[in-house]
Image: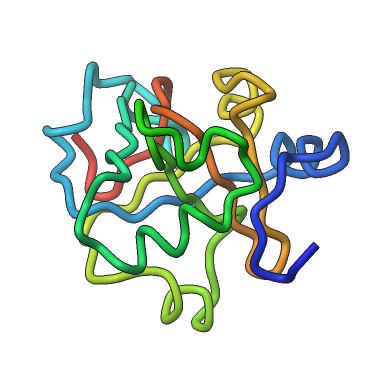
Length: 149
């Protein structure tokens, strides 16, 4: 498998995701993705959110390149091509941010155990070269938003 290939998460990768925290950076505002506020303490989820995977039918060359790197037989299906969300496993370093993140003012942190519990195993992928977790479809569940809702 190539270094940039996103493959279905193995049992060991699922365990690592469960033990960690997924980070996502969004251009959305907290209000746009918050379904309900939560009374979490410091470092705890403060919102129930819906992160919606964008359609792959966009005129965005880099989104297309990311999506075709996912080892998923349905990656190019005409019905729902490229509905993937990309998250980092753990806080990304400088290289990861430079290569993957454009200006996005909202930081979304999802406890790994909650993420794995919310996503069917067939919809969870991983890219080991830069520790990127890829979800097919949306994430609905608790998260820590910064800035908060």
